[in-house]
Image (cartoon, rainbow, N blue to C red; front, side, top):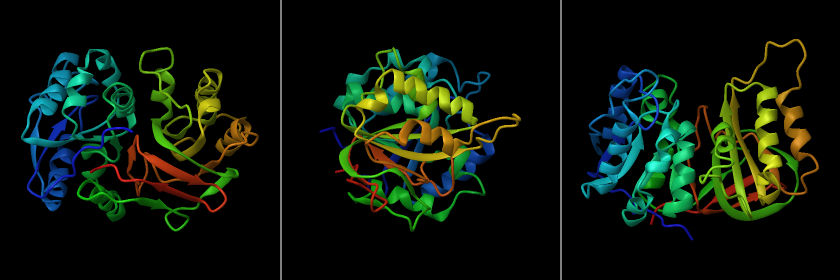
Length: 306
């Protein structure tokens, strides 16, 4: 059983960090009004608005901000400003024991998947896969439902995903329970062979990605297959795969790729979840028990806070 962080209260202060790429400054400023609407205060990490090429500051600076937010007793939760690239560059230097001893809400996705996996493995912490400030919350496309998903941080609530939210399709049938883990497919594949290799044994594996054409998704799934990560999983939750179109004259479709890997999987696999680089974005806690029912096309997830 992973450690669930304490729920947030109105008036709490949220720490804003940039573990990967720098956020769009204008979108970041607009997103602060959303935090205000939740009744939250915020505090930027010392380096959270820095720009170092495609990175938000140096590795040392981004790591320092992350450590500072977990150390600071006035910070009750942490939200990432953006994804992009860079979190994995310092993951092996993170004081994961510090996070275990100071469990807090930690929220983000995409490149942040590497941090989710590390915290799950070595801090035993429930973290949250959800939209971020710059690329999501501060944009005109951010939807009301995406905003409502933040309510799960203020009270323990069971999440229920059905066909009413988006069209779901079962690739294989059955129902199974397990701890929900995963996130961005590319980042999960990059972790193979490192100490931050995801543990999928008897777990529900969530996969999503953006900008990867079918051949690339194929290669990433094949990496998970050959490393045993697919076979170890109890079931597969396929989230949103945005901008996967290819300009090649000949290509398999993304659905054909999924069918190749999962049609004979003999474990529940359901695709079509609006989890990932999409709107609405159904935010979920990682590391809690969940139930995937491919026969009734439902995903039920236990609360992420206590």
